[in-house]
Length: 375
Ligand code: SF4
Ligand code: SF4
Ligand code: SF4
Image (tube, protein in one colour):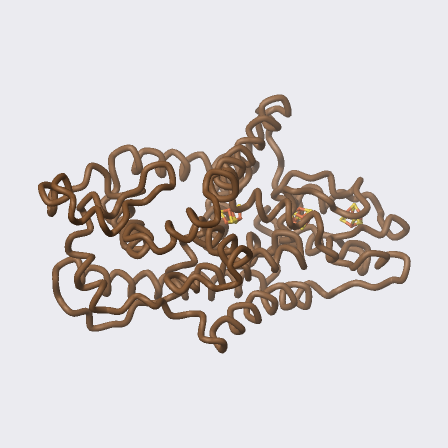
């Protein structure tokens, strides 16, 4: 393992973080926590057969990216927004478009898992004064893992299912309660889940952004989209003093001081390198030809543009009536108390159809505890 120093200074030996990025991260994390509390109150009431005192928060669908991918395919195929989880599509599209404007900006500005990962990494920097990066011959194949996972999901969504299969899946009993299934997965984690999460937390302290760098398929997708973004961190070589503060600050371990335009799938547009650069206008988010024309965006403006794109997409879905699910409360009240039944499962992307309710095997297994809560 190589030890990478934390680099440039803020007096603590930790890389400086732009205040506006941290504010956006904390606000987003706060919203996610509120959504989590409200969804917990709502789903636990239904699971216990009671009437919830709160409404289901549509924002919970942000945790259903595969549903978002399926809904995107359905939208492109049929020209209609999936009415069961419209917010999943809105959030998925908002996040993807953010990255198409400013490479992987969702990762550095809004992702709550990214914030957690970043804080764990900073704890590691504080404790050990550096971060561990496996040697290149291990690091490069490990970074490929997230693309394998992304490829698997893309294959399942775009190849395994045909358009009718996508529509059938999105309307299936399983898809109608998938948010509650996800909640059960985290609310009653198996020993394996706890062990895996524990290992990831510990590893993230010593290897910065271990989950994001090696395993997150969402980050892989956003990284690929980010390659096409017009706004990228760009170095003006004519102003550069080769102090290397940018490279030391970069959580993605990129040799920023040698790069012109940062075209890397690993760059999250965090702008930590910009904050570390002592030369005004040398390193900044720029449009194509920005260096030649001396155009750059102030860091706060670059982040505001990316977040603005996300809010605009979600806002458009909301004002056009594609935000709240079409599933009525009465249906949730009927389905959620029996969520353990085989009706709410799928095998290889093929979900059980409603007709299965009439099958003798289903009748015999209603109400039995699930083999696994999470799918
Ligand atoms: S790589 Fe994944 S977990 Fe990490 S910040 Fe991006 S989306 Fe979030
Ligand atoms: S190159 Fe700059 S913006 Fe990109 S990840 Fe590294 S520090 Fe962040
Ligand atoms: S881009 Fe800025 S921080 Fe990086 S080497 Fe040049 S002057 Fe130093």
